[in-house]
Image 1 (cartoon, rainbow, N blue to C red):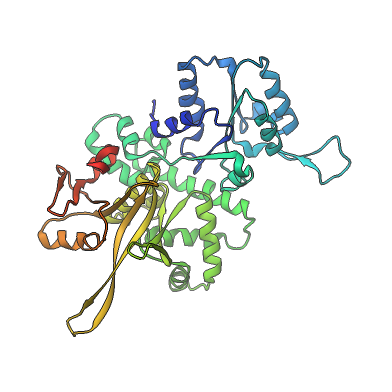
Image 2: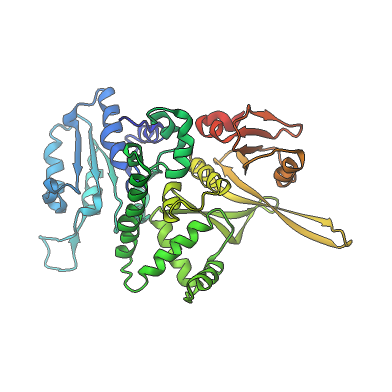
Length: 433
């Protein structure tokens, strides 16, 4: 099965020969290796690059175990680059498997050589274009980017978007949305058939890979059950405003165990660094400033969230919101939760301040889009309730309401666009209508 990932492929293509190390990051099993070894390799062949110019090494393959020694790795790559007049593409998968070794030319035991030294050395070769991935307990987080400082160019890879999933869905396209919002977009899901197969895969992956990586990376010994319980709490409250203090209180009420908000905050950072979750901060639209807390957490893959809850909490409003958030991130937007504050006189004649929420403020650096996620707008009262916040935004940027129903896109008298969720997800230009 060929799964197109054109957004990421085009990003890779646009970054060729930019003088930086292209670093593909993202949650494990989201398709980083497939993107580089299959799709990008095919592109290189299409533009005339021969296979002997493409140096690919899967460092998690035992057949390549000797290249986990940085000296062997560097020597091998250089031995393949035999013609100074030809371009070479170096693609290294699971770079974290390369170990640090003692510098053989120095007596200092603290002087070591690792993969960073190898890659920085290759960067000095004008005919080398370098691509790496890394995704286990050492390289899950943004550390892989910071180690290269200004020499790295990150491409964040998410699981399959709905369009990628829909285009590869075998048959019965009408079922694609139900499958996607239930099991998510990890590519392996596409080849599994029964609910049990998909459920077992997601639950085992979360427990035995994602959580284990976090535990190993941060050397967590005594709080393994706490991490497990915390993931479940966050899964139950996805898309809800929260903060470490509220999570700490919830933890105590549900488990009877007291965990400080500082510890909760640290563990949530671990999950975020591991690409398991993303956070959206609150942004005061009128005041043009960020509000400290509360904030919202979303899962990088909705299927993982659903599996953590044994598929019991299938509230489509929260699931839709999570999918929309991830879609906007996939398209390259910076995404915040919007807040619109206004003053009014209440029924008791008091002057009060009220804060209204805008689900998403999506910013691409030049344009801003205000987006509301709503299951239905069956009547006028419900519609007015959904648009109350965005009507109070004092600018002319695009305002959109995305609903579950399959409708023809339309604009109201205020210029607000109404569109269905599938239309929005399947057509990247729907946001511009």
